Amino acid sequence: MSKKGRFSWYYFSSPQSFYPLAGTLQPWFAALAAVLCAVGLYISFFVAPTDAQQGESYRIIFIHVPAAWMSMFLYLVMGFWSGVGLVLNTRLSSMVATALAPTGALFTFIALWTGALWGKPTWGTWWVWDARLTSELILLFLYIGFMALQAAIDDQRRADKAGAVLALVGVINIPIIYFSVKWWSTLHQGASVSMTSAPTMAKTMLLGMLIMALGFWMYSIAATLARVRCVILERERHTDWVAAEIGGQT
Amino acid sequence: MKPRHKRFVLVGAGVAGLALSAGLVLSAFQKNLVFFYTPTQVAANEAPVGKSFRIGGLVEKGSVKREADGVSVKFVVTDTAKSIPVVYRGILPDLFKEGKGVVTQGKIGPDGTFSADEVLAKHDENYMPPAAQDALNQATAKKAAESMAVAEKGK
Amino acid sequence: MNWGSWQNFFAMGGYGLYVWGSYAVTLIVLIAEIVALTTRRRGVIAQLAKYYAARRRNDETKT
Image (tube, rainbow over all chains, first blue to last red):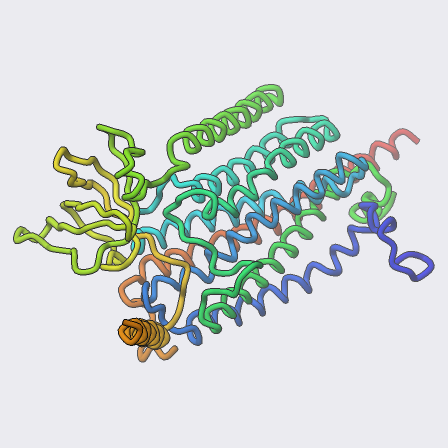
């Protein structure tokens, strides 16, 4: 909190004051993630009924859909902070974008992996090059490209700028992924949960999926906060406050 | 590895990744934006001629016939307006059912029969327990019967 | 959902390999990320501590 006791965004936009805040919040998000995932898994396996069409294989949905949502959502958040960093030249925004990428890439991988294991028994194939699956694969390459590009450039400011441009260009892929099942003929089915119509799932199934999604969300926040703390230490090692934090003295 | 070499490798990996994704976008959007053609489109000669392509639709009710050899199967793909007979040798996915969605790849023969080398099930986005599905089916059947009765009266 | 027995639970109606393959890999990936983050934090702190110690020694020899 700021000296006046009023919450100030400017105060927390400096890495020095965000570092301890992230450290305080991180365990709470981690604990929330653990509780939500435990409850979500219980509902997914012991409360939600068998599906009439797919039998038990549909239970992959409880991680597939939340992971796919997170893969897209984290990219949007990464694009947002990249844009803020590019426009306002704030160091912390770029650090947050950098910290988001690995977690986003992991959720993209999980979405693709669980999708393959779900597609084999239901559709009859691990993989098809339809618009939904292909655009999700491109999302994985975008995350990897962002990380590789940042790692390749030694000058931190230039690395952040190049990464931000790539991240922002890649944002166009998100609506393509989301609407691909509507715009084109795909093997992938349409959305069961959307903002425009009632969900097409039984209530307990939907509940399990939403709680798992919340759990993944909290996990993403916890992982990102933990990573951004590492990034802050690495990048701010020449400052007095990091020296005081780690070395005990300046 | 010297930092310069490391950087070179990383930039190379980045460029390769971007080129690969750009290539995938282009090929996917050229060829596969239309992942399948409907029987109506095939009837209108919109599907590629002499090449392998996919057709998608519903498996017509009562059309699935398994041959004596146990691996060959015949069925009809329909979009309710037009329909195409399909022959296929191989394993069908679990969700392949009459009245359900299907996407199949193959070539169309001179007699209009589609000989498939891959059959994929396309399921819908509805998830419900079997009891609810039964209730829904019964309700639909009842509604259909009622509308039939109304139609009969109107005659 | 009542599975009756653990055997039924693990079989997942014949889809055990697919369902558990999905859940196992997800778990492994998330745990790997947590381990990687913990290791990274320890590494950064150890590296910085060494860096500051060297800098301090340097300052002392100068004065």
